[in-house]
Amino acid sequence: MALSIWGLTALPKSAAQAQDREISVGIVQRFAENPTDKLTLQATPDNNLTIRFLSGDMQPQTLQTKSLIVETVMQPLPSPVVEEHLVLSNHGTFETAEDSALQWQQRGIEVELTQPGRWQVWAKQDVYNTPLLRRLLLQSLKAQGDTTAYLDTEILKEVPRISFVLGGYRYNRHQLEISASNNLIQVSQGEKQQNSRLYAGSMRLQSNAYGTYTLVNQVPLETYLRGVVPNEIGQGAPYAAVEAQTILARTYALRNLRRFVADDYEICADTHCQVYYGLTGTSSLADQAITETKGLVLTYQNELVDALYSAVTGGVSAPFSDVWNGSERPYLKAVVDSPNSIWNLSQKSLADEKNFRQFINLKEGFNETGRSAFRWSRQSSLEQITEDLQSYLKKVKHPLADFTTVKQMQVVERSPAGRILKLVVETDKGLIEIKKNEVRSAFGPPRSTLFYLEPIYGADKTLKGYSFVGGGFGHGVGLSQYGAHNLAKLGWTGERILNFYYPGTKIQPLNDSVVFWQQASPATKP
Image (cartoon, rainbow, N blue to C red; front, top):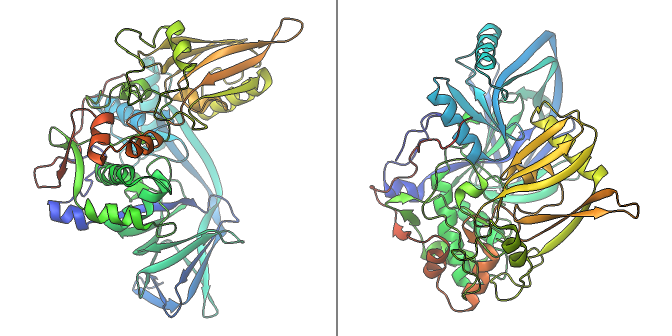
């Protein structure tokens, strides 16, 4: 077990508690971001919803209804209010953001991890709680040569509030607790009630760190897995692949309960965590795997592994540090994604551009052969590349965000597993370096960082754009979900599949000695 630097993560005290533990999942993360946001919560037939909240005299009030429509109401403020926080760094992923946060903490700065859109490291709000303290810290950082920190300041004249009507009365509240007599709640969004899904457990609609609200589903861990496993591994997957995915999903959830401390919940429901759709789309095969593997997790030296996985590796999985900043995970290695000896990385490193292009042009003999994302080529004009890059640089507050012309792009550093470590863009304002997984955030075409660039010239021999030629979909670290499909079809067991993608690891039942997450030393400077 471990104490997170962001606060106590409320990890279970025993294996039995872990297996039955309720986890809090943010299923709608920034409700009321748009004034038209609307949520509809409904009980199943012959059941009721119970709505609990604090009434005006601060005594809890309870109402019952068949359905509840929650709307956004913009509430004018008596006078404008300054909303401000000091952003120390800005990242596309939690993993790199966490490494940056550890670096800031080592410098004596108290921080918190947030996700207003991209992942950000903030100077801790309740420590740097005045404009003067925030500006003194920023001034000190700039004097030390820092170029990433900035103040995010907004003057608010109105703020969103959640509002609903019951029994002819309109209620405006900051937090709602919603439960159902049979623990089943249907949730949909918008006027047309899109993405209607059924969830087990209870709900909380609560404020977050960004002035909006989060709908949080409190659900037992094993029930949560029913909404994750089939949606991650896909319908029609062979049982061994489903079994491997189940053990990974359980391990991932328990290891990552620290992600949303700043927002008072634990894990999200999209690809920034694991895709979770409640009880919508459950499958009997996934339910069987969840039951038969109950309590089983994947460990390395008695610690839960960082159970990362992606849809398609592109023929070779990536070590952790190929994609993110942070300490290396010994069990996350470069593995050629084939049941055969198709390529020897020790003899033909993919850091060599010639070798890499030869590898990407191989299409047969891999676990993912035939998948649409296994090999791909996508073109982008200079105009589109410019637009994509400008948008990205504005999000990260890059000093060259006002460039107007892309002159050239080049991959200047690649890892032995082929992943891009550094890509340089020459613009009219100077050189822009983009590293690791940020390449996927900066441009539209690449589905992974496993690609090379091919310039496109016009009839006048001027540069018109680039082809992005590569393989894979996602970060490519750990298990390939479609690779697991193929290995299972070849007769591999779930255990053998996991040992292939996570060498040196062990499947074991949860017990009181298993470490859920241990703070590692940061690997990079912020």
